[in-house]
Image (cartoon, rainbow, N blue to C red; front, side, top):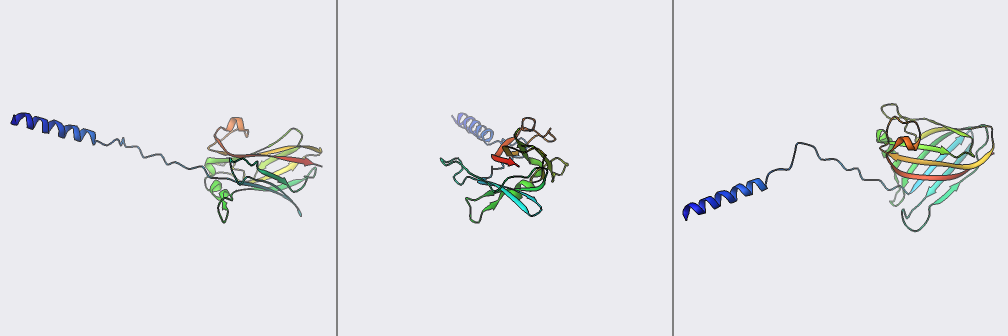
Length: 186
C-alpha cells in the first residue's frame, strides 16, 4: 500500500509539473495597436489669401446620425492649393489630434485623395515616411483649366502596402476614415 501511495504521489507531481509548463515559445507577444476614434476630418486648402476648408464631423461615430459635411467654398480653375489634413477625436475635451499619431506612425499610414471624373484636379504628396513613400497629411492640389462639379474622396488607410501605385485597390490595409466631399471647380 505504501508503494501505491508513493507511485500515486509521483504521478500527481509529474502531472502537476507538466500542466504548469510554459506556453512561451520564445516569441514576443504581438502588440495590439487599438484603432483610434476619428470623429472629424478637416482638409484645408490654401492659395494666396484664399482658404477653403472641407470638414466632416461625426460626433456619434457609428451612431444613428450621419456626418455633417461642409465645404467653405469652390476651387478656382488653374490654381495651386497647398493642403493639410487634420484628423481629430472630438469625443475628448480638449479634442485629441490624431494627426500627430498618424505622422509618428507614417510607415503604417497613407492618406489617399481621389477626385471624381467631374473634378479636373491632380494631387501631389508633400510629406513622406522614413522609406520615402507617400504619407499625405501635406499635399498640393492643382486644378486644371476645366470647370466642373464632382467629388473629392479622402481616405486614411492603416497598414497599406508600401510602395503602392497610389490607388486604394493596390494599397490594401484597413480604412480608418473615408469621406467624400462635394467639390466645384469654377
